[in-house]
Image (cartoon, rainbow, N blue to C red; front, side):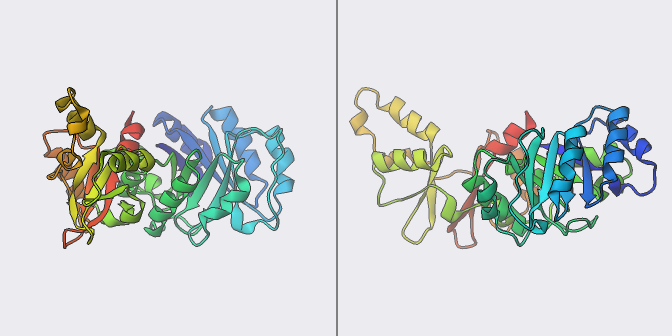
Length: 334
């Protein structure tokens, strides 16, 4: 996940000093907030003289057209317009280069992106736009999952309340870029903040249930329907490489992964018809309670002698609540 540094969050130093500091610390993107202020393009011109870092421009305006000529003469790598301020559907001319994004605030449904399916990404505002230092609203974890489900080919950017813990969770959820402002500049140093935003071990206040893939979105097989066909179809349609096994009350009974199916086939190569669905279940996989924290989850994984790709999540009664899938996190660390 790329860190996009919100350059105007540093109120104490001249802009060039801020940019030089960010360049020295190898920040990947420069986030420029434009609250209907055309003068930011003077800053963009100067930034182009000072460095070659990609510019991530977020415009809040009810008149996008007045920015088009400026974007033609001062192209940026990422251009985002705030959805709620638009008076009519936004059509960005094709000769304006850079990746296009739509920003939405927390109450706005991700389905509004339907109208902008030609755009490259969504920017989810997890706090109030234009206000620095706000707390990340956990409801946005579900918005990220919803968007990923509805628009799997599009990128997700997040702005607001991103600290070390939130950054870890966002990386796990496959977010492409997160904007960091006050957290980045209020730390002892930018380098210290960047280390926290990218480290793999974090202390936590959020619970597993805040960001897990919920039960209703998981590939599920009932223990009374463990035919090889139902198992393979569930794993295939779930597109996660596994399925959870539960009883009629959703009590967790185990997990069947691609690896479990492969092991079952290897044991019965001489007669694949002998494979029984019940024999494929891993009945004792590592699991975690929905009320545990990220810190507890990392401690569990660290103490495990084998790699964990997915972690079933249970409630206090042993019922399946969901799962944490680590595929996105692994991709983010490459």
